[in-house]
Amino acid sequence: MEGMKKMRDELWRKELRESMKNKERVAIPRVKMPELEAAYRSRSYDEVNMGLSVEQAVLEAKRCLDCPEPACMSGCPVGVNIPQFIKYIEKNEILKAAATLKETSALPAVCGRVCPQEKQCESRCIHLKMKSEAVAVGYLERFAADYEREKGAVSTPQPAASNGIKIAVIGSGPAGLSFAGDMAKYGYDVTVFEALHEIGGVLKYGIPEFRLPNHIVDVEIDVLRKMGVQFIANCIVGKTVSYEDLHEQGFKGIFAASGAGLPNFMNIRGENLSGVLSSNEYLTRINLMGANREETDTPVFFGKNVAVIGGGNTAMDSVRTARRLGAEKAMIIYRRSEEEMPARLEEVKHAKEEGIIFLTLHNPVEYIGDEKGFVKQMVLQKMQLGEPDASGRRRPVEIPGAVKTVDVDLVVVAIGVSPNPLIPSAFSGLNISKWGTIIVDQERLQTDLPDVYAGGDIVRGGATVILAMGDGRRAARCANMQWMG
Image 1 (tube, rainbow, N blue to C red):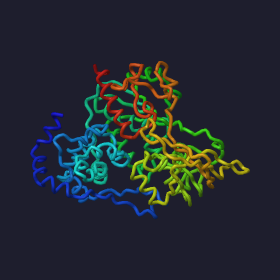
Image 2: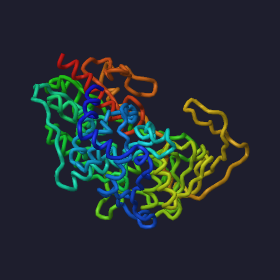
Image 3: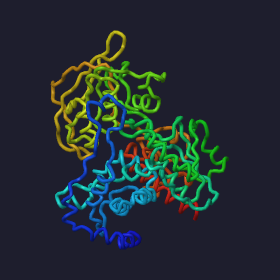
Image 4: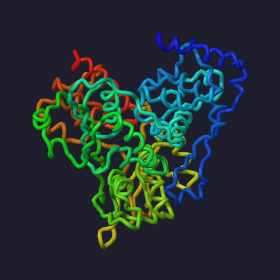
């Protein structure tokens, strides 16, 4: 915190603060993100949010009051120096803003697009106490990262001198990439093992390009490569190579970040019919394997009446994808009300604009098939809200006898995921929870195997990109203290 205070006390920051009164800054309305027109984008894979102009970003940056104790930072799992990078934007030194982001975040262009800032950094913004909208931290983060890429000036953090210690990372999702970036900065020889043929994990297979284009992910991965991180695709740790193999190859430590790729189902009648599939399979076939493109051979169901079960971001990604693949009727089926939906408000807004139908307070109880074994209808139980459950949301309760039948030809189940079971089963000595997650020391993220740390969904059982990245940073800091000690 002392370093933060010194930065805030630098002359240029003082001059910026004094250039406008706080009352004037608060009076500036929050910037609106330009978006593709809904009718066009609902049939296109082009990115929906179009980014800010320099003028928009500089004006939004002026809204930041440069607080003496910035509460926004306490809401950031990776500890981005939010006031510093925003004030660089206000000063129109945007490349310095991008470099500031990379001091703590391995994926600023990704985080600026998919992180729930409204529940994290922006939720702590001082503007909210003044009945004003929060500073658009996420939009500004995306802007700075995009600016340096578009200018051909992508910066690479300078790693420390090599210490000669080899570290293995299992999984190239956000937790693994964040850990790899920080360990490279510390001077370690880092190798990331990815089971799939593309590097990026859930950032590639789980999030559609209209929300997070693959080339954005690739640019950030290339920065890690320039820092010395090596990537090995098509390698399944626990199958292709074992825990013992890694040690024989000279790896001193391991970070398990293999994610939560095992889909959950509801175990209701008809769930095994053709045309009923998990969001994992549906999105992976399209996002990673190009099933939506004519030149690829990957098959996928193209439904006209599509129902997606769930209310999170993955459900929104799935239903909006179905719409883009030609669905005439694309529906969200959610057992609670819209107010309880865990999806980002922006994703719900975009879905509605694109013609998605929301059937809230409904829950599927049966799928009905045709004579060929394909789903043709679903039976929905109408629900009402009772008392709050352990999640803090009001518990959905059945309305006796209130059911209805809806025609469908594709159902995508997006009700959550369970951890990938491979690492827990392949690494003898790990402590595993009843949910299949790896149990770690909550402060250090170290497992019962002293040389193995773990983070992200394999520990949490399903969370956000930024929380996984926060795990990667924390594990790197603690592992470095152990392995260099």
